[in-house]
Structure formats: C-alpha cells, structure tokens
Image 1 (cartoon, rainbow, N blue to C red):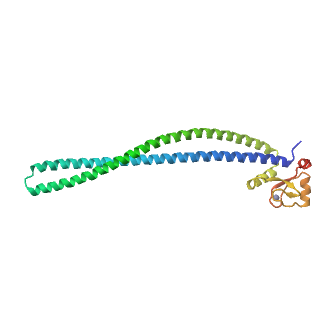
Image 2 (image 1 turned 135 degrees about the vertical axis):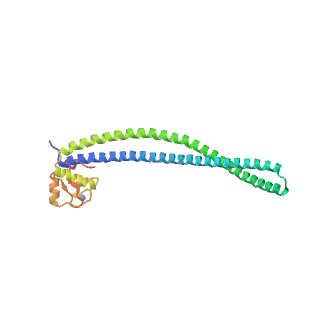
Image 3 (image 1 turned 120 degrees about the horizontal axis):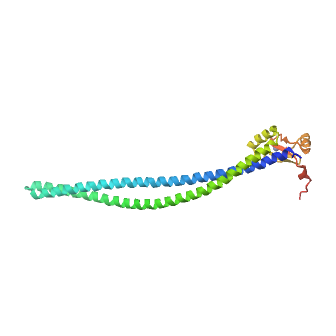
Length: 241
Ligand SMILES: [Zn+2]
C-alpha cells in the first residue's frame, strides 16, 4: 500500500526539520571555533606588541647608556685638562663645562633608571602573558579537537539524512516536490492539517469544494498562505480528550 501524498510530504518535513536543526548545531560549533580562535589571536597580537615595545625600550636604554659613556669620557678629559690649565679664566670655563656635563649625566642616569624600571615591569608582564598564552592555546586546541569530533558526528548525520531524503523524494511526484520545496523556503511548516474547515496555520476558511476534496484525501494549497493542506482521517477518528 502506498502512503497518501501528504504522509510522504510530512516525512520530508520531518527530515528537513532534523536537517535544519543539524545545520544550526554545525553553525554553532563553527561560530564557537571562530570566536575562540579570534580571542586567541587577539591575545597573541597583544603579547607581540608588548614584545615589540620591550625591544624599543631596550634599544632606548642602550642609547641612554651610550650617552652616559660619552659624558663620562668627556668628564675624564675635562678633569685632566683641569690639572694642566694655567689661567683662572680657562679654569673657570672648564669648571662650567664640567658642571654642565654633570647635569647632563644626572638627567641621563634618571632616564636610565626609569627605562630599567619600565623594562623590568614589561619583562614580567610578557613572561606572565607567555604562560597565559600557552595555557589558552592548549585549551583552544583541546576544545577544537572535541568540537571537530562533534562536528564530524553531525556531518555524518547530515549525509545520512540527505540520502534518506533522496529516497523519499523518489516516491513523490515532481510537481508536489517542487511546490513543497518552494514553500519550504518561505515557511518552516509547508504542509499543515485542516481544522474546522480552515487552514490550521493561518485559519483561513476553506471553500466547501476545497474542504470536500481535502476530506477525501487530496492535498490543496491554502488560498491565503499557500501552505499545503491535508486531512488525517485516522487522527480525526481518534477521540480527543
Ligand atoms: Zn493558510
């Protein structure tokens, strides 16, 4: 005995609903992976920019150290000159130069201390971030493996459903199939029962002749919402409490 057309279409609805639920789950997993990866990448970018900052600061402190060495050697030279200077005027001039060099050294020494403090702080932060990054990476990789496994299970189910759907489609006349597929793109429930001589989705009242045809087992599109309408005689016979 072949099933009435509406039963075949309802079987398709069931498959399609399962399919969209699977699609949703797969998309959720993909979204989760993408979000996790984006977070991990953003953390790594932050870490790399701190590393770059440290490199700049080290360069800066090297430069200040070099400046200090210059000041030192200038001071040594001037002090030597101080011993050999003969007149008071030259002596005072040298003293002034030495005093300027001294100020210069103080400024650079302060800069160096500040740079070292910043470097120390940054190095600690980077060390901390590297550990945190490794931890995050490990977590991501673990969760990725598990999510991928879940996705594979879902993908296999999708394949099975597609095969099942193809089998079911063979039993349905092409015109019904294309009608169904068109409606399916617009609504989640493309085929609905009639209830009290009306469409049970939009409650549009059926014409008596349409109602009669449907009661005899035909399916017809609703004249208002275009969903396919059917009548389940078996169900109607069952008492409803
Ligand atoms: Zn309707």
